[in-house]
Length: 208
View (cartoon, rainbow, N blue to C red):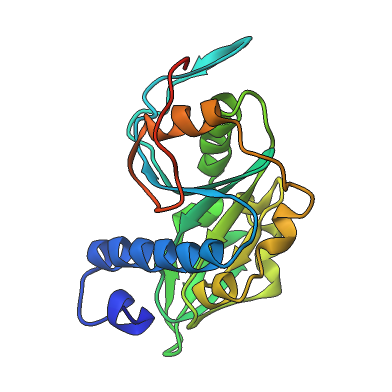
């Protein structure tokens, strides 16, 4: 599946976004399959209506979902696919948007919210307080202006990469030092809430 065919091809925005999620999922699988260490990949973690955690109040995230999750050792990556169009992401008067080649500007509300941190809170609970990193993936044909460093979606850090960069191993640095085995209970808690898991996930176990 080519990136261009998946994100353009005359499809509307919703379909483009769904296809781009598949592109990102495929890129993650290709990268993780080449790693010597054991990792676990999940797609569409969508059952987030109530997420409990030991010693923490449950999170109630309604219909929110997490596009992809990578578990490695004692950390995780929350991967959010943004199938935006061709152009440059930038802040204008503090508001995020996509500047197209024809000079028009399309608002990108996701750049101005912190919903990803709520989803990260869900993973924090599902992995028994393990910390991780937020990763936003944009198409290869989308560029970033330096101004996005001040966008709200990066308030607490995170990485912005493309599918090609994922396949080239650019996220490897985020997993440095996390070479131990993944807690099978972490795997099971996430697997129980997702619509599908990558080929390197494992079957749920008891004792959730």
